[in-house]
Image 1 (cartoon, rainbow, N blue to C red):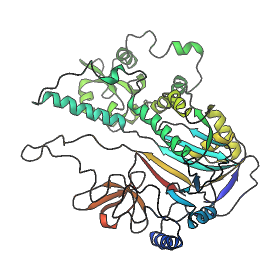
Image 2 (cartoon, rainbow, N blue to C red):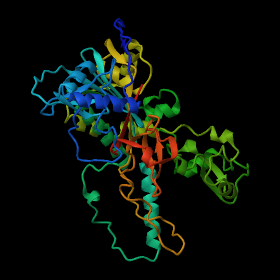
Image 3 (cartoon, helix red, strand yellow):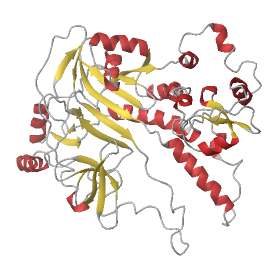
Image 4 (cartoon, rainbow, N blue to C red):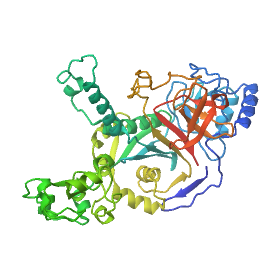
Length: 484
């Protein structure tokens, strides 16, 4: 990766470049054998899982060029990162061993002084993406971007549907649990989707603090005026108390009066059954708000079904629906809990989006989540940054469903998942293909034909035998890959 100076001065630059993600497996294997002959890279600290196809799981080439190698002391305390040449010397002399591959981290096998400098971690909170950046000694020592889970709400709805259907089937009796649920009496209960966002953010911060000596954390706290955003302009103070539904009986009556008791699809006035229809259905994320509701007769409402007004043939009505502010609301919710958990790692201070925007524009950085985090951590001062970053995605640990919802031939319900390991591989294991492409196991079959996806969930290979896959890292709830 190439370092560049960004900020008010923009004076220091360096033209060295490197690839932080090892791709050439053949060259990697040969270099590993050469290093092993010298006595370096003897073993990894964590050798508990042996895999017949792990190949280069425990042996990796030290990155070269402008990238950094993170260092951990013998006692497990994070130290300041070093250059690849220094790390290669420590590994070849047997004074350090490889701790992890992504990011490349070594642990010293000898006693050393633990002199560290202040490292500030900047976090740019968001509804679907979170940016991370660590700044120390006038340059960025880490950049990363986390993609949060957005499927939790749909999974919970699916689980509720299956449980609801089970109650109507002829199954064994289960006593109701309305008053004895532990979560109902738990203080500080959060919505599962918001809890997942907060926990994933804190998990990545703890991961960064495991290989960098974080001295302080700066978090960008989002504040949105949703009513002004819906109106499209600044509102007077009295307008917040007298909104769109002020002195109205209910939302349905307001929509009927607003649309003059006329079906907005066929134009029939005062039909026998005048209903209220969602322009964007709730199943598609539509809100139950006046801008997303129209009056419709029973026949039009039934014919429209579970599609949008544009798909139904009325793009002019679709234009009335405003963009959902759900992401703005989710960004604001749970921020205090996230900050409280981060304060257990290091002292936390708060900044705001308008400050980050000014600092990023003065530093002449492009608009990305991790560059926003760089502006947050550096307070807009001149720092040396690099182009590459670490891309992360939060995934589920596994599925809890044991059997399929529909029976197969013979009326039997088959198991909907394979064993924990199939031919030694688990779901979301990080693997390498024969051409050096890095991916994650997405599908497994008893025949040995696997599917491999990239970190964004896009398919790389739909069917490849497990014998051609090389295990790099075991599955975790956080998928990580280096991006140039």
